[in-house]
Image (cartoon, rainbow, N blue to C red; front, side, top):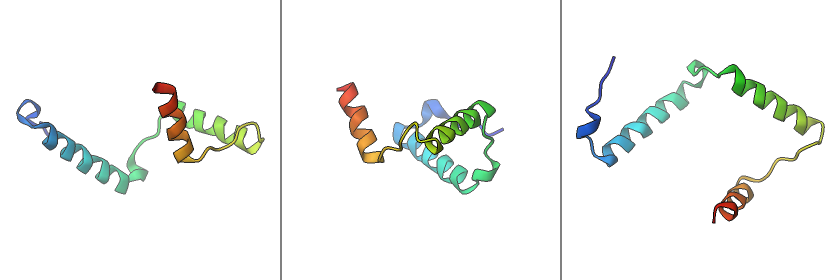
Length: 71
């Protein structure tokens, strides 16, 4: 197991390590396990979309709606 000296790392170094990890995980998505509960939620949402009970929202509009709620 790899151990990082987190207490000795700067915030910038920690963020850089996180970026590298995410980048690597994105390149190997098929190896990342999806929890069953997450798959269940996505399946339910997909069914609602197909039935026309909910609509997709543009990402920019969604971000604005979230920002409006928390401000």
